[in-house]
Length: 82
Image 1: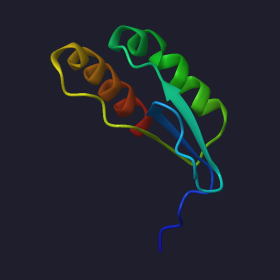
Image 2 (image 1 turned 120 degrees about the horizontal axis):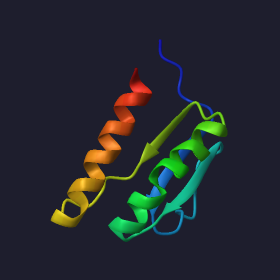
Image 3 (image 1 turned 90 degrees about the vertical axis):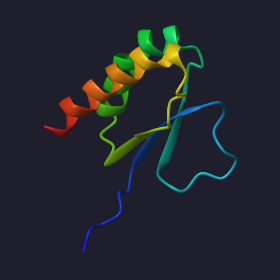
């Protein structure tokens, strides 16, 4: 039986929801694709250094200006899955 993660990081757009579950840390993402792309790897390293059991990234917008960012994120995720 899989065990639910105890310490979770969430990269999300906007402010954290008022009620976060215990053990969940919200990190606000830049809302502009260029700013997000610039800080992506730093944010991933920050989460990795905090020794989370898991972390999640809110779905990126599907507009054309976000396509390159989504590609970069997919490549980063593939590196973590290895």
